Image: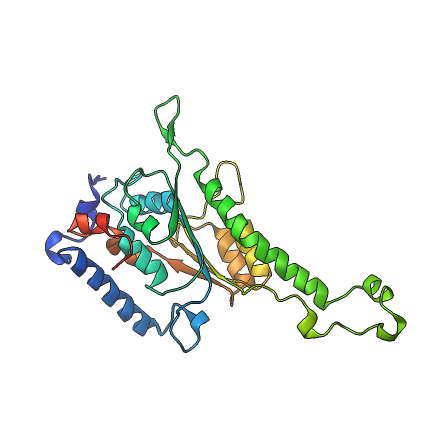
Length: 284
């Protein structure tokens, strides 16, 4: 069985790959456009017939999981080095350059420069690894840091939606507290609390596997979002995502979209102009 020493040996040969960062991103955009036309799909059905500008959308990136699964797709069972994952390509594949509002958070144990992401308003949380007694690198709660951010953003939405539902469906006890002339009369719609706008939530991971301390991983938070009608997009590698996510998709086929990085692997590798991929985080 042959072993490959670098990502470059596994990826397309240099002469067949676009030269330079601009060409790399142009080739990716052309590939995405061709794929959309071939599949007859749109990535942002939330936008209806218009441009996906300004609707509420939250992004959560588990960069450790993405890098680890990308490395394994090339037969390398370790984290990628700082020059191998193209941050601009990752951003474009997941966002398609749409101007949504909302929050973006990422967690990583990679000490590379994420200043371009920070400048674009993405909160990048650096959680260094530790070495165990055998000298192996181990995460120390990186996925849990991201899950905490997810909870801070989604829990108020869940609570507000539940409160709005409670007001819209008064219990028999609440009826007995009303004057006799108003028994059975629901409050006027304009007097009910206005629920917050429903965001689209995008989870970007490699496998969606559980962390060391939260065994359900992102599954519980995804299910909570789906149960109140939020649209969710989940990114990962097709044969690495946990089967539990596919079971949930069968229950919520209209709300949960699962997208795969497999077809984009060669574009996720930093372009020949490595400095372009390192210096640019926005995908432009």
